[in-house]
Length: 88
Image 1 (tube, rainbow, N blue to C red):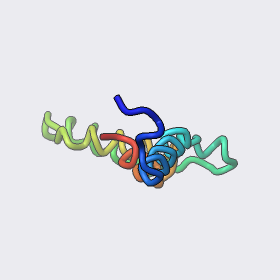
Image 2: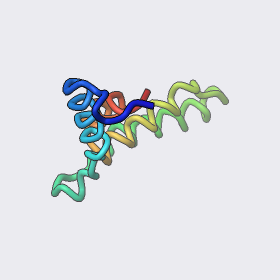
Image 3: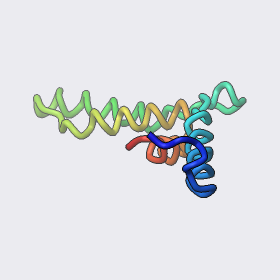
Image 4: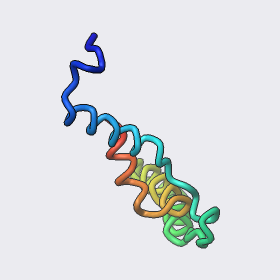
């Protein structure tokens, strides 16, 4: 394992930036004074139920779309930049 003095300045800056991103966890929109927009989630949920009622089947992808829409309703669309930047 390297000691701190063995890392370059660039490596140390990259690590600091990575840790800053890690610590900037998204805050729910409602806590920021914005209203949450549940229209997309509501519409996808209705489609899921309607598909099951009509066809006795619903596309499994809809479950993922519902999850994504719900996350965006709570945290905003910028959530995915944070998620993609912090996950490996």
